[in-house]
Length: 541
Ligand SMILES: Cc1cc2nc3c(=O)[nH]c(=O)nc-3n(C[C@H](O)[C@H](O)[C@H](O)COP(=O)(O)OP(=O)(O)OC[C@H]3O[C@@H](n4cnc5c(N)ncnc54)[C@H](O)[C@@H]3O)c2cc1C
Image 1: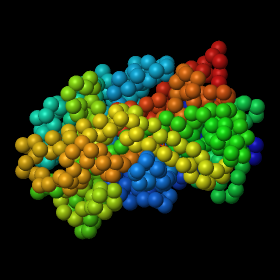
Image 2 (image 1 turned 30 degrees about the vertical axis):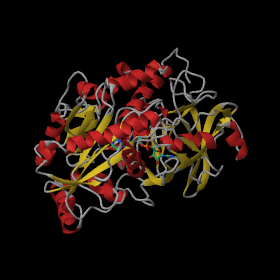
Image 3 (image 1 turned 90 degrees about the horizontal axis):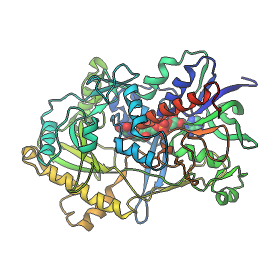
Image 4 (image 1 turned 120 degrees about the vertical axis):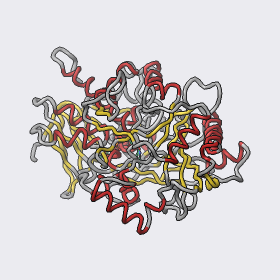
């Protein structure tokens, strides 16, 4: 490995990084190095969808864990991100959601030229191998398997009926453009296949691992990027055996996720000048917005005691043993389920042009306040959700020049008034759903936030208390064409050369829903842009 050098170095083998490795190495004349801090994705707990119950624990080698400040007057909370081949797609809830055309069109309207639905919609179609077959905006034959949770569950059917009763249409595909544009509720599309997780690594990396021009390093942590003048020329890595530099001929591509990508930029001298001076980091580019514009969905789990239909008994004690056995023998049963069995996009109040909230139905409840990992001993379910377009903005800053020190994360939940209104409206909608006649035979009582929460003030207070990360952190290296944007619309870091960011941190605003598929689609689009720059006659980066 002496004098090692690659055309492209991709930092992070997560949702975006796996796509980039696949796309760039498709050209055999280009050498690609993919570097991942975490281990391989061979754990049985990764393959088994409900293995996340054990994976998502601080200290597990497959996750990063951070303490995030939620905001004024609120306790801190644990944030987790995937740390393995596949990144967060190896530990996530497998809910398959793409966002709404209007999200991407809003990006374009804000100056992100080339990122509207016209360019992004076709990325989803191209990546999908969808169980529901092809249509104008749905794909088959692509690398990513998408299946739909089997229909026919009595309690889910009753919840879907309840949603229809209050105005949200029942749909076969919740990602259909009409469903995300006008609202739709149904069984949940998920990134699973034959009862197992289908991560970005399964879809994009495993099939191309043998390419001779692709090298993958695991257990290797990129500590900082090195520059010659203003050009990124190498990365410094830490491995089991110590530190070394690896050179890069064309570009370093940061796909380290919305926490580690801005952290790496700051550690490397691209960030708020004052902060970097105070930590003794030589300044490459004063970029005050690196780490700003942090966006997150605040998830609230409304939990209900039910008469029947709950899976709680399948996730503890002897029931769990049975479920695990069924998974290993037949790849069937509750251990194969994604985080939500059903769900959709809803307008929580009259007068809205498009859905403002996503609802996810989970046929289990947690003990205590919904944040603990213990399964409720009595039968329960969760009607969870978040308002999809948070205006509140948080921030992330390094606190030391030492790469091993975690950054300070401020989520700033519910600081914008619009978010407070949206939160109250969402909780009211969930309660209205729960009160529908089709659910009368099932629902006994509300457990959290609980019937004592009645006024708007109490609902907001409940949201502040029970609301928690949806694990969709984004926006911390925003793209745009204004001078404050960290990246230009080709995802190049402003002020330097040979460096791009490609992951959920590039989002100027959060998309309507979960962020795994959007992260992959962003990388698909980025690969097109880079391929265009590599065409003869184009100005290579
Ligand atoms: C618990 C959880 C549940 C979720 N549930 C869902 C869901 O059901 N549906 C959905 O659509 N989305 C879900 N998400 C969100 C979604 O999975 C993520 O938004 C998405 O995977 C992020 O992709 P990314 O490429 O930006 O980053 P990641 O996939 O997080 O990848 C970043 C990678 O970079 C590596 N890395 C970081 N720093 C370095 C470094 N310095 N050197 C080397 N490697 C580094 C990391 O280890 C990681 O592998 C969930 C996320 C989590 C954490």
